[in-house]
Amino acid sequence: MKSQVKRVPNARGQGERLRQEILGAATRILEETGREDALSLRGIAREVGISAPSAYRHFKNKADLVTTVLDATYRALAVAMSEAGESAAAAGADPWGRVRATVTAYRRFAIDKPRRYRLMFSLEYEPDRPPATDHHPIGTMLQAWTDTTDAYLAEVAPSRRSEAQDLGIHLWTALHGQLVLWHTLPSPAAGNETILIELEESLLRRLLPAPQAPSPTE
Amino acid sequence: MKSQVKRVPNARGQGERLRQEILGAATRILEETGREDALSLRGIAREVGISAPSAYRHFKNKADLVTTVLDATYRALAVAMSEAGESAAAAGADPWGRVRATVTAYRRFAIDKPRRYRLMFSLEYEPDRPPATDHHPIGTMLQAWTDTTDAYLAEVAPSRRSEAQDLGIHLWTALHGQLVLWHTLPSPAAGNETILIELEESLLRRLLPAPQAPSPTE
DNA sequence: CATCATCGGCTAACACTGTTAGTCGAACAG
DNA sequence: CTGTTCGACTAACAGTGTTAGCCGATGATG
Image (cartoon, rainbow over all chains, first blue to last red; front, side, top):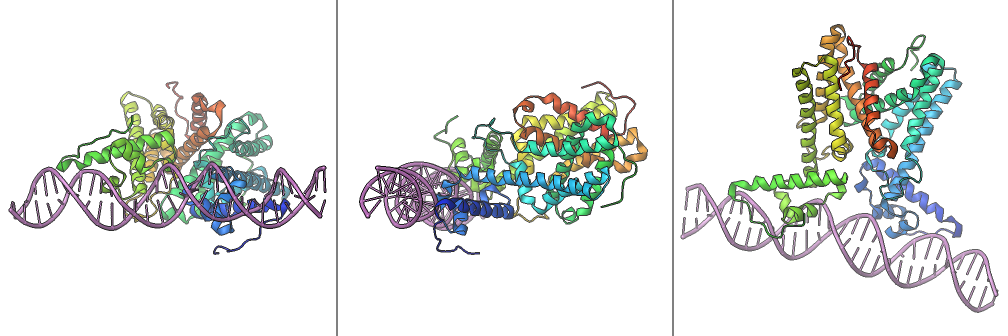
């Protein structure tokens, strides 16, 4: 775990490898501490076995490094959601079950990587870089949710399919808020994930048009 | 706006005044920048006209200062909510109108003080101080919301009053999530508060048991 | 083969930061 | 008149992000 004292420079084309090592160390530190200012370039350098300014070959500055980590986290969450939905569908789950699978994947991610999840929504996203270059990764997340609700409505209540976007926003924002609350609240709730699940069910029943019968699969 | 060069020390009993000045400067800087690490004790000292270590007479460290600012912000938001609800009641508003007044006060606060609002939920709350000493101020917020939903249910659907806590959580977390999303999203939505209001109405209609008729007062 | 640019990385240094230790004048209490 | 406390200050330490400049090895090019 301590700093490996020596390090052979990477071969000519393999400079990219160091970038990955830096990213990995940064991700781990951010997940452990949860605070951006607890992440120091010198600390990363110590772990990876390089000197601090060497990181600037691969990242324009510290904010760029953090942004890159969070970008990857956004993408990981999005694919976890869609994979959960798809595999539930492949297993023959009903629409309600697919939504629940997606919701569960989202909750799992937020609970298993709590600090990174919190950071995703608490950091100003790269305030210097040209803002119109590509859309904020949070847009991807929104898309994932409206996809989920749209697929549900398409099967359960096709006539109300126009509400898919609103429902997607409601579902996502409410879940996010629940998780923030749950993370921030002091001890009694902190270890008790079941109250989160119950809140989820209560929310889904209120928001989504009722299916044939809420399948008791969880 | 620049540093006032001289400053007469406060009289014997009036050391508290400096504390308020520090708090004021810190609040302003946090609201302007929105990032904790953009707030420097030396910067505050420069504005107030003191030297940096003098702040340690009034705050144990930087985290304590930030916590104090956010504590005050929590309280301000809570009273804004309850005041809005009470004055709506005093004006003879129906239950639905009172809920809307509370919601509007919450939105106003989050939009008018966006950086501070964001900081409230993005900071680990004083991780060093004995955690059981007093409850997290977020609990106050939760209480305010369950009070609101309980008052609504008591009048509109007394039989479902046991759902008040769940509904309060749903309402609050969903609103918070909407605001986070709205703040984070890129430009087109950013200036457009009406879509937030519409989202709110859509959410309230879905979550709250219907009243006699949604009053068009807004 | 010799040259030269580029890659991968390092050292030194600057301007800051939070925080601690120790000091100093003025005001009040005994 | 003496001591203590209050309200502040200066000096200093360790650590930070970031920039400028250097250096050895590698690869392409003449």
